[in-house]
Length: 253
Length: 204
Image 1 (cartoon, rainbow over the protein chains, first blue to last red):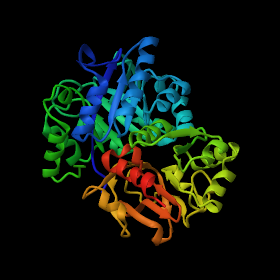
Image 2 (cartoon, rainbow over the protein chains, first blue to last red):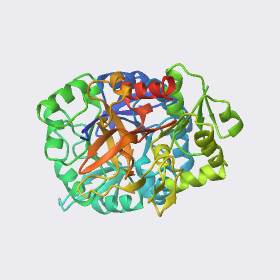
Image 3 (cartoon, chains in turn orange, yellow):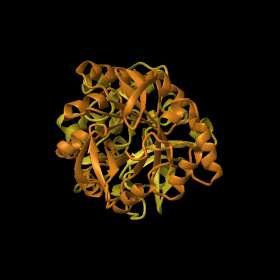
Image 4 (cartoon, one colour):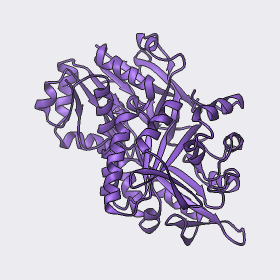
C-alpha cells in the first residue's frame, strides 16, 4: 500500500537552514547537509529545500548544497525558491534534485509549468502555493513573494490551472496557519483536495503528533510537511511515524 | 567499470552517486565506444516515453543498446522510464514503440480512484521466488514516481510488485540479461542500495 509521507522542510539562506514565524524573524538552525543526513537516518520520506536567498551568490551556494545533499543521502528531495527559467530548473536537477517546486515564478509565468513538465515530466514539477483566507471568508487568495504580495487570484482556480498545465503535485502552505503550530489548514486542504487528482502536500501549522494524524485521518493530503518541529528536535520523524502507525495510518517504518 | 547511458534526460547524478557509494568505478556517457568498454550498463529515465525514445535514437544509441542486449547478451538495468522502454510499446502521448526486450505494454493508470502520479514509498512484494529478497529488509519499501505502468507482461519476468488501488504495479522485472526497476533504487534508502548492489555484483 502506498504510505503517507512525512517531509521535513528546510528553508535555506546563504547555505544555512533558517526558520521564522509567518515568514518573518528568521533564525539560523543548522547546516543543510547535516540536517538532511539526520532526517534520512530518522526515516523521512522526502525532503524539501527552499532557497530563500535573494542573491546570485546565494543561488550558486544552493547548487553546491544540492550536490552535497545528493551525495550523502539516498532519498528523494525537492528544491524550490527562485527558480525562474528552464535553465534554473535544469541546474538543480542536474545537481541531484528529483523535483523542483515553483511558486511566485509560476504565477508570473505559468508557461514555466508547462515547459518544465514537457521537458522533465509532470512528476518533476511541484506547484508550491502560499494562500490566505480572504477577509470575507469566501475562499482563499494566492499570495507570492513569501507572503508579501496578495495576487488577488483565487486559490482553487490557480490549482486547476496549474494541474492542467502539467504540475504533478501541489505543495499547499496556508499563510494563516504557518508557524503558529495550531494544526494544518484542513478546510483549505479539503477544498483543494476536492478539485484535483494529483497528490497534495500539506504545509503550515503543524505543532503536534495529533496534527499529523488529523491531516491523514481526514484524507485531505498525501504527505505532511513540517519544519521547526523537526529542526528543534521537538519530535523526530520516527516519533511521528510510530504514532501514525498506532493510529492505523500507513507509514514506512 | 559501470556505464550510465546519457541521452540528455534524467537525474544521472543520483544514480552515479549511488553506484560510486557501492564501491564501483562509474562513467556517464553518450559515446557507444566508451559504453562498450563497460561491464554493465544502466539506463535511467525521467520525462515522457516518446521523448526518451526520440532522444535515444537521435543520440544514435538505439542500435548500440539493441546490440548490447540482444547480440552481446550483456547486462542492462533500466530505471523508471528506462525500465518502461524495455517493453514493446507505451501509450504515453500517443503510441510509441519500445525496445521489446520484455513482453507487455506501458499503459496509463486506469484506476480513477487513486491519485496520479503514483508518488511515494510503496511495497516491493514477492511475485516469484528470487535470491534478491534475502538481501532486503523483511518489509521492503521503495520509492515510486510514475503515471504509467507495465501491463500484460510475462508473469515469469515479474519479480516484485506493489498494489496501487486496484492495480498491480510491476516494480522489479528481470528477463535474461535485462533487469528493470519501476521505482528508483538510488532513492530508496538502504533497500534501494541493496537492489542496486545485487545488480552490480550478482546479476547475470
